[in-house]
Structures are given as structure tokens and as C-alpha cells.
Length: 395
Image (cartoon, rainbow, N blue to C red; front, side, top):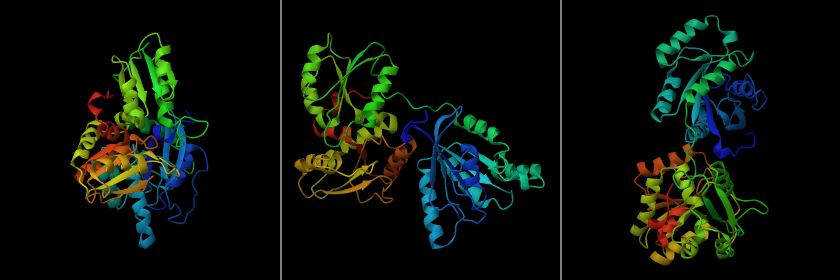
């Protein structure tokens, strides 16, 4: 669990004013000196991430942020980065060190509740408060939420805070990657071309996650490359119940697959677990509405150095241009670099988002919907462009 990928960890963001002890609280929860602590307000400038396991929540990513009351031109930049953390927050802590003037806290709590992000209020520095009960009552009266009382300095109340986090999280585990596609004992064939984009000596994350998901279900998993697909099929006693392929070879695998075998791709499976697959399917169909004057955003979760025949930067643009003309414009945004204003785009084609948690991908989908821009992902876009989307099995 300590080596769980960042994208599979529950992201817990810590918000509050400057110098309320957010960094001290992060250190107390993790039991390590992760964040720099100083009595000077504004010590934390950029979000600080710390991966750890919090029982009974499991693997988590704690995110310390700058104070949301920061001022000045630099303070505005810090506040902007703090706001961006909301997009990936599965849960939130709002930290206070006193109960007077809770306007900032109320604004942020209202924002988090509108986004349906489970939030725990924390009254910190109780070691320095003269009347803790009065402070708690004032917070309840103003924010309509009961805080957990802690002293990050003395580590008082940290166990109670962990329990409060577990209670607020509830049961929100991610759905299985292959939900509804297989049952125990099924033979499943994974077609995994090892092109120049694949990391040397390793499998890419969606492939690893799919293998683990299938093994957990009690399936019999066989892996092969594109060149050995037919040989692998011939070696199997019966046709596989499901074939999962790299989206780039969708058409080739579809031509070779047995009629009884279901077919999907790693990217399609990621669409099911990372985002709203119905919205992404409609986004794929919107490709038909592109014109030679259209502009398309290619959004990648990771920031790898692109190589030749990159799927997002070269292959998908080439497929679209072959259909609609060379004048279609493409913009590439990678990692956390995602435009706020999407209205200039006619379509967004996103990667599978294996490096993002579900909350962050859903926030991107929601932003596109709010601005009326269709959004899809690599696998669904390729399946539609190749005319086989209706024949692809969806999780």
C-alpha cells in the first residue's frame, strides 16, 4: 500500500489561513517533518504533497496549501494555486486556530460543500486557547459544522482527526476497471504493443492496473504483443471472453478477434473508472461535427518527453486531419497545465488520465461541460475514428 500510485490514493487537501498550523498539522498526521514550519505567516508557498497510509482510509495523498488569505501580487498567485488543489481534492480539512472572523472559512466551506467534497473542520492550537468550548460553539454557530479539536504541536487529538477523516470518507472506493465485462475463471487476452513510448523494462500503469484487477477477479490472464496476437489466440483452448488492447491497434485487433470475444481498450477502461464515460462517448461522436476551421485541445496528464509517433501529439491529430483537412489546429497541454477558458476549442481529446485521481479528471470534464465544449479520451476517439466504437465493450 505504501507504493500505491499517486492516482489511486485518496487526495486530502488542507486549507486555512496563513499561520493557523496547516503545515504543523500535516507533520503531525504523517509523524514526519514533511513541511517547513515557521511562526512567520506565508511560509508555505506551493502545495506540498505527502503520500502515506492512514488507517482505515488506506493510501492517501496529503496536500498542504498556502493560506487562502494571502495578499499582494505574489499572494494572488499562491491563492490561485490553492484554488487549483480543489480540483483534485477527494476530501478537505479546513484548519482554524481561533473562532473569530470566520468569513474566509465560511466562503471556502460553502465552496467545498457545493462541489460535494467531504470536509472536516479542525480547531488547531488548542494548547494556546483559554476556552476551547466557547471556540467550538462559535464555529458550530457560524459554519454549521463541529470541528475536531487538536494541538499539532503536542499531537493531541490527531487520532480523533484520523477517525473523523475515515467517517467523512464513507465507502467511496473506485469501481473495478473491468466491471461487468468478466467473471471468475474467464480467459482474458491483453494485447500490449511495446512501442517507443512504453517505459523501458516496465509496463505502463493502465496495463499493470488491468492485470491486477483481472487477477483479483480470478481471471486467467494472457499477455501478448500485436505481432503474436494470432499465435496467442491459436494457443488458447477456447476463445477469450475479453480482449483488452492498446487503442492504437484497435482496428487490427478487431479484424483478428474471435466473434465471441468482447473487445475493449486500456484507455476505454480508464474512461470508465476515471471519469463520466457517457459524456466521453458523446464527445467522441462530436468528432463528426469538426470542420477544417476547428481547433482541438489535446490534454495529457503526464509530462513525458514526446518521442516519434506520439499518440496524442502525432497519431490522433493525423487521423483527424486525414478526415477533415490539414488546416485543423491543435493545441497541446500536458500535466496540470489545463486552460481555464476552453470556449475557443471545438473538441477536447484527453488521455486516459492514469496519472490523475478520479476527482481531478471529473473536474476537467465538468469544466468542459459548463463551457459547452465536447470532451472525449484517446481510446474512445480512436475507436470512433476507426468506425468501431459501437462494437467496443464498455465497463
